[in-house]
Length: 180
Image (cartoon, rainbow, N blue to C red; front, side, top):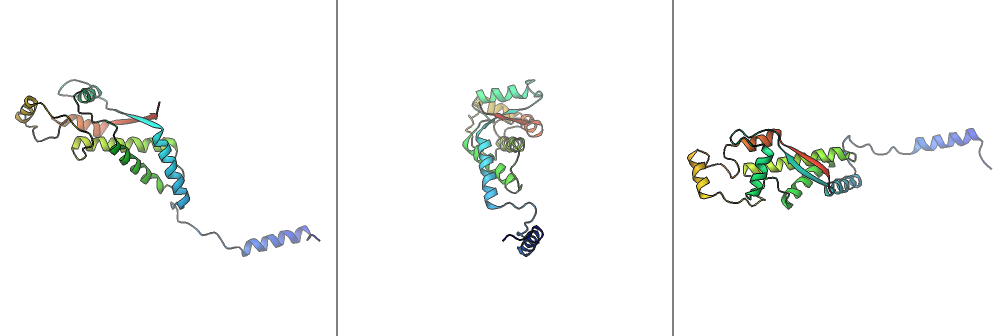
């Protein structure tokens, strides 16, 4: 025999009142299974994108656009914007650390912005000489002497006056787009 509708609702209410409350989590905490999903999502997006460095403006010493100057350095064997395995590991670790504590799956736009920021940080470290994941071609003897004579001899390769490195750090942007 079925209980009357009012009695059935009363029984359900009483059972719900007796059930223990689910444990309350602190805001911003992520469950381990959610953290894994976030990590997998970030990695999948990272593998699906490509990036390029854009530096607006004109170099004061040479009169060249900064992008053209970077292309010349690349042709000379000094590719500061090279995509290397060390850069990829750094960027992936930075982006994962950024979003693990978010508490939700990040938007693709958020992941792309974080990738761009981490790539730019790594390139700035290359100019500063703190990371050497790219083999830079040595300076010619004549240029090394001229650089020393002008008072720039103690600076890393690619940073005679430091204008390019400063411009990359201050105004450089990394454009992240879907890989082709």
